[in-house]
Image (cartoon, rainbow, N blue to C red; front, side, top):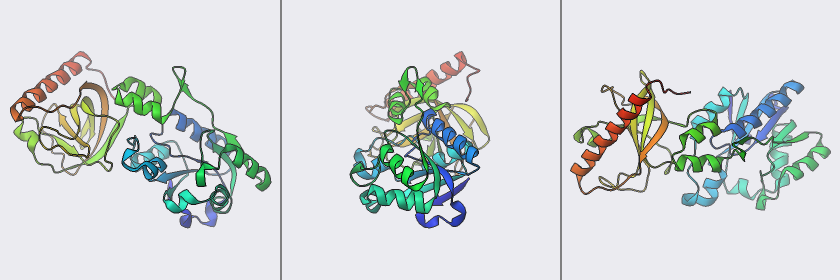
Length: 316
């Protein structure tokens, strides 16, 4: 899959195409249905598919620190689209210039002049342009004048309720990883590279891999049963702590620390996939390091008991 950054990266060979556009945070079943619908139209017309998305996400730019936690990194979003067979991913930098463009200027520069679209798949709740003046009806009218089709996104439901990033974020916050997997069509996973930490885990009798995170917050917080893959590991039983480490070094930024239950693998510098399985407890502040050490080992015992009761549980 080809990654294009900004309108300046578009060339004649990128036109014409069939496109869709959105934040696509999480690339859940609803997003996957949009991509499938886009691909279906593209194959009928003999054209490539282009997914248009943003970085940062519009909500992050507009709400700043008050934006909802991101479900997926940019890299994970790219990999998800590649796995779905998308031909091109065009990433637009969401900034003040883009936010203040009129809907007509945005649509003409992107869809007509930039991509030369022959068909566009658009959600009924997607808005674009200054004051969010552009919508599906706007694009349908423009398409009739300029000669391209506009198709409404097919709604996807799980359990009688629409699949959405908001619903997925709520399921994760509640520790309902079974529902999260149903909404995603895959287990919810965080990927990242192991960085050097303060080695406090070793002092507490539970050495941890500290995963580098690009964003300040995650949709989960607490202590979790997880499975780890990467660096020679395959669905290895583990526990993870997500939070600000209030007992040791309270801060504002979320941290992800993972303790593999068996062995002591050398993980520094390696890229790991952390699949969340179940929640053990909330993060909490303890009265000293010894109380924290005792709780960590209770958490490890709880995770061992979980895996002993369900030895065949695995990713996917």
